[in-house]
Structure formats: C-alpha cells, structure tokens
Image (tube, rainbow, N blue to C red; front, top):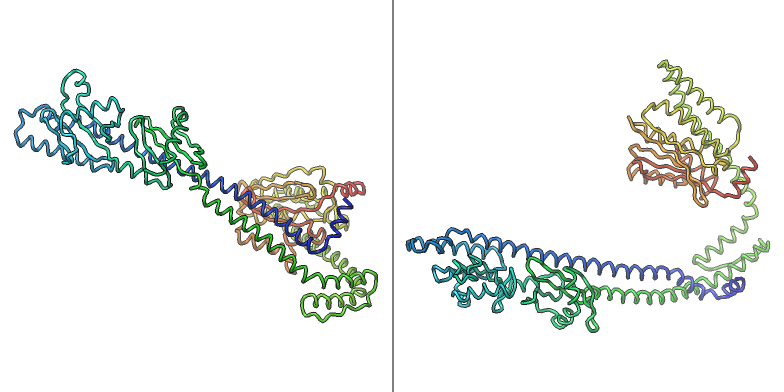
Length: 588
C-alpha cells in the first residue's frame, strides 16, 4: 500500500485532475446507464401491457356486440309480423300483408343501423316464397336454395358465425330442426357481417402492427406485416392449443416480434396481434445512442477542463506553496510580492497580511474564544430555569386554591426534587441518567396539570445512555415545548412519546406529540432559525440548538419534523464514542 501511495503522490497534477474527474463521473455514468436500461424495460412492459389491454378491450367489445346482435336476432322468433307472414298469410288481406312486410323491414333496418358490423339482413319466408331484405343488392341471397345453403354451412363452418362464399353470416332458422326431417322451415333469417367494418376495426388499433381474426374456416386480416404471419402461426400452433390467452416474444428471421393472442369461446374465433419489437424500443435505442454520445463528450470536456485548471492554478500554486513552506519553517518575515490582479493576487496579499497578524492574534483569539463559549454556555443555562419555575408555581398555586392538598403535596415533592437538581452543584455537564430523572420529575408535575387529558409513554433509559455526559437542562425544554405548544389545546386523548435511540456514532433523545402540529411554512421558518447563526432569541428550542452547537459543533444539534402521531417530532442528537464513554463511566 505504501508503494501505491508513493506512486499516486508522484503522478503530476494534470493526470490526477483527469483521473479524479473520471472517478467522480463514472458512478453517474453507470447509474445513468442502469436507469436507461431499467427505463427501457419498464417502458416495454408498460407499452406491452397497454397494447394487451387494448386488444382485450377490442375483442370483448366485438364479442359483446355480436352477442347483442344474436340476442336481438333470436327475438325475431316472436315477432308478430313475421309470425303472421309465416302462418297466416292465406287469411291476410293485401293491405295487412303489405303492412306486415313493411313493419318487418323497418325493424330489420333498425337492427342493421344499430351496429356498424351489420352489412345486410335478409329473411326468407317460406309462405311468401321470397325474401325480405334491408338491401336490394343483387348479391343478397333471395332464393330458398341460397338461404338453405347458408343454414347448412352453419354445420360445416361453425357457430355462431357462419362462413359461406367468402362472407360471414349469423343464421337463424325456425324451426331449427325441420330440415333434418325433410320439411321446409317457416323462415330463415341471415345477418351478413361487414367484412370491411371488421377489417377497419383491426386496422384501428393505436399500435402499428398486424392483426388477424380467424378460426379453422375463415380469417380477416388488416393487411399489415403479412410476410411473417405464416411463420408466427406455425410457431404458435402448440401454445394456441394449450392456452386461450398469452403474450409472447418471437424471433422470426432476424427480427423480434411481440405477439398477443386471445381466444373467444363464444365466437369460436381467435384474435392474433403482432408487431415488431423495434416499434417499442426504436426510440429508446435512439436515446441510448445519445447517451453514449453524451458520455464521450463528457470525457472530452473533462480532459479539456482538467487541462485548463492545470494551466490556471499550477504556477500560482507553486509560488504559494513555497511561501507556505517558508512560514512552516518559522519564517514570518519573508515577503511574497505579487502584481497579479486576479483571485490569486488577492490571496497572496491577504496571505501576507495574515502572516503579519498571525503571531499577535493567535494567543489572544484562542483564549478569547474559549472564554466567550464558557460565558455563553452559562448564560444560556440560566435562561432555561425561570421558564419552568413559572409554570410549576402556577400549578401549585391552582392546586392550593382548589384545596387539592394531596396533589399540591405531590407537586411540591417533585418541585423540591427539581430545586435539588438545579442547585446542588455548579457543574455544566451531568450524566444522561440524572438529566432523564429530572425530566421524569417535570413530567410528573405536568401529569397533574393536565390530569387525564394526556397519556405519556416514557421509554426506559437504555443502559448505554446512563453514563454519557451532556449539558445540564438540555432535555427538559423539549418536553416542555410539547406540553405548551403541541398539547396545550388538547381536550382529551393527548399522547406524548419520549424515546431513546442510537446508531453507530450518535445518541438520540426524541419527544413526539399528537397535537395539531405546525404548517410547512412555520416548519421552514423554525428550521431556518435553528440553522441561523445570527444573534437574537436564545430561549426554547433555539436555546437548545445553540448550546448543542457550542458544545459539540456539527456533531450535535436539534432536529424538527412531522411525527407519525400527527403532531411534531423534536429530537436532539449528540456524538457517541464508546471508548470515551467507558472512560467517563470510570471517572463518574
């Protein structure tokens, strides 16, 4: 390890700058690459799920629509006009027959207009020996033979959708079994489905891809990506037999495809939707290209920036280092002359002024700072005591006035313990255990004050805390703040939790209430005051913060946050050194 350190120390500044910047940036590049890949996978998953839901929604909508059409078609069995034309034609007048035909045609037209998937509806009535249709097109089946052929095709091409002469029909024959008995049915109704509407629906998916609606006898495709269709169907032959719905990734040739399959048991048909995976990740790959361009550009910028810093700071630093070494050797008289007008010139001039003043100021400033801290610590401690006494004497006054002598005796007992604690010696620091006992006395007094309005959960003091030395009267103001500001307006079911915690190098004392808490604006204001170094108010939580900072520096302090109980959580933290703590226990 020593030879490695010497090797690093011998590297010139410019390579060090480059290496340092690269080391700093590598984690960022790595995280960016990981996030890019994770984002790519997440986007693929989200898009795939979205497409799957769209396909399912379309298929369910088509199934529900055809089910509605079939249900409406079956209601024609009870149609009065159709029954009259089928059974009572011989006794109907010309007017009645014409009216029945027109009414029936109107109802058929209404059914046709109710769905874009219906191209035409025709009813062959045996008694009429003719067809009533919503269309006058020449290709409409108009003879008994044609109607019967569509009915027979139902047994060969499946139900409920019948395939006949490259067309799709919904067939209704009444009665259904008479043709098997060699008789003629009363009527045969055929609803021709619109191939164009079905094809347009397959083409209307928000995702660009190939789609096919099919069964063993017929299929409808949107005429997109037809080239890989056969290969995809061959590879999915076994999965389609085993499952009614799935989403898979397939590789056809050199291209990868996302395939979504769903089967309808009601329609006896399946929907297959497939699209190239590049449709999803194509744009993401573009982002990846830009990412690597950014990485390369960053490396170039790092090298140029490092070289610029090297030129700007190397020579002035060499001059300043020589002067530092001179001062380090005890030479306060040598002068570092400079005619520079930049920041280094300012540093050189200020450095010389500092060297001149250093010898006379070092002792004076050091001693003055120590005395100032000691004086301020004592002053801040004295500010805490009266605030608690005012509240305690007020409680005692109220109890005596109400002739509650038993409670007054308990308050005076705890108040006596309080006086005994603060007046028995002039130590600035006490063991954590003594300070916690003092807090318990305070809580006992407040329990009498607030009666049954507040429940206190006071956690037992952990053993590791007991001997740790802390400033006096540093814990009680936190509890007092919770009573006065957090729980002062609580009428019932108030809660106060006092907790202890620790981590590797800190000890925590926290106080949490279920009061109304404070707004975000007020929280920001309090945090700003706690972190401010301006002189001003030195009572309450700001008092605690200043005392902790004077005692421990940045290793100690006070924190405020919103608590889990709904109120305010305030806690202090102090540094914890197990080895030093053991020594303090021995001294105590």
